[in-house]
Length: 257
Image (cartoon, rainbow, N blue to C red; front, side, top):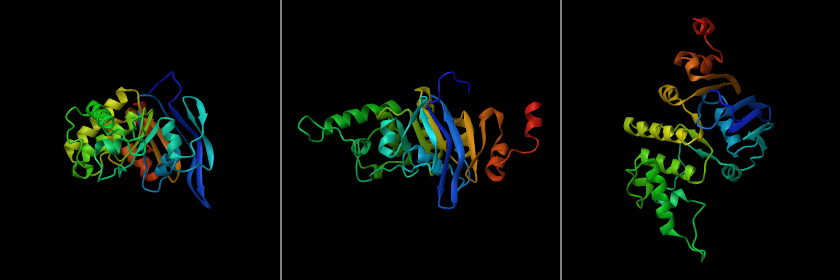
């Protein structure tokens, strides 16, 4: 994807080591507005570590992060959120005993001028943002433990976009979802892309990757072993990068054909 604007976010020459173990080795990654980039690799390849660095959950040993062309420091998840970087983990990090509005504003509750929880406003705001994503969303006041996996994903995404997300990290968003819920989450990704939000999609489902992503960046043994527009590679090419750390020998010939 060609884009004249500076990337929403750039990770430049990021490395992370734990004693003698180097989990991330000189990795660079960029993401533009309205772009979905798949971050792929086997467990232990370094992709989760790289995403934790961007989300402020872990400090890099070396390297630089730039947001809109400006160097930024992201020492904590709170600092990442203030910069417009939100993460939706596979576990969703929802409080099962709370309803949708309480989860949406968890840790960032709206207050009245007297300092009390403004539950009515939180309900109104939650209803507006949830219906923006899914007009059929109901049962806002039931515990999220009673909701489907797809509804829970909507709440997690709504929480991110309500707070003016620019960069959204999604960790296996369709894992353990049925076909209809997977389709709904895919539709949400398309809506976010259309709104100009940049998405880093950590995913093992190759079908989702090729349906949703503009580019893929593959990690193997802590390194970035390939960054390609989705139309440049096949599923077999990506699997070769994941498993072997390199493209098949005939890739250049196929590209030239």
